[in-house]
Length: 123
Image (cartoon, rainbow, N blue to C red; front, top):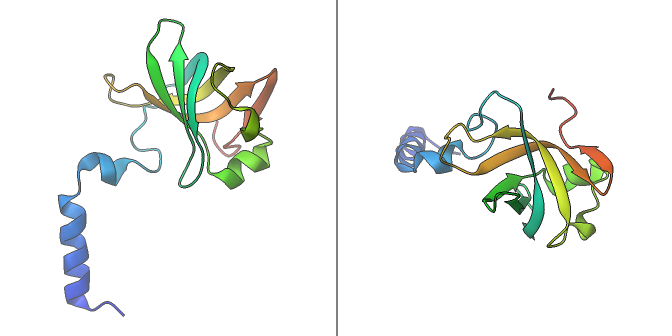
């Protein structure tokens, strides 16, 4: 059981974490506007807390797309084993609120002619 000193220490630890580390998970770091990213897969890292797909857009810019947790991707039917380098892919969701950051959170993935909805509870 954590006593009052434990809560104070925990609060102090959270306060010194970089803002990016504190705000990374969830949706607070993204803009409210819809965003679509299409390109070719460069690399894929799947697992918890979510998957990461690096994508090269048509203009050559490299973006990071965050997809769902393994259970969420499986529930949507996303074929993770076919997410390989050079595969054409489109992500629909929201980009980072920081315009200098090439990162987005995908709500849907369009891949091999199919649309996979990772977050059906979001519009």
